[in-house]
Length: 138
Image (cartoon, rainbow, N blue to C red; front, side, top):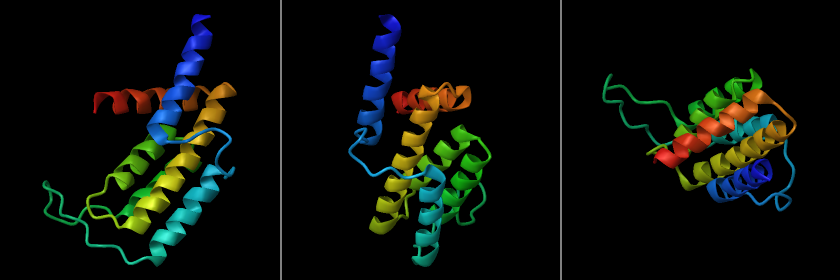
């Protein structure tokens, strides 16, 4: 009973944290969605990224963050992929179009990870747990 409640809580957290309602979005492979987002962002002029306090140089663009998320996701480093997607999603110099593209990609990544986790993928389970812990801290 407790395990079932925990599983239902996890699904509810997914819905609340990402706005994803299972079955209500078109099924998209996460890597494909990330690749599409990288292409979309590369074709869109990006605003100048603010400088990073430590270096005084411009920080990574939204496109660069999504590109790093794609690389991490494809290599199975799901926690890093989520981290880069969060950086892209909260980037201070993002446009409306970038926000929408990143949100769609994040939804695909999280849906993929929840499917993997439900099928017993321990790395996906750990990435989701870490993501939820980070979201609860903020």
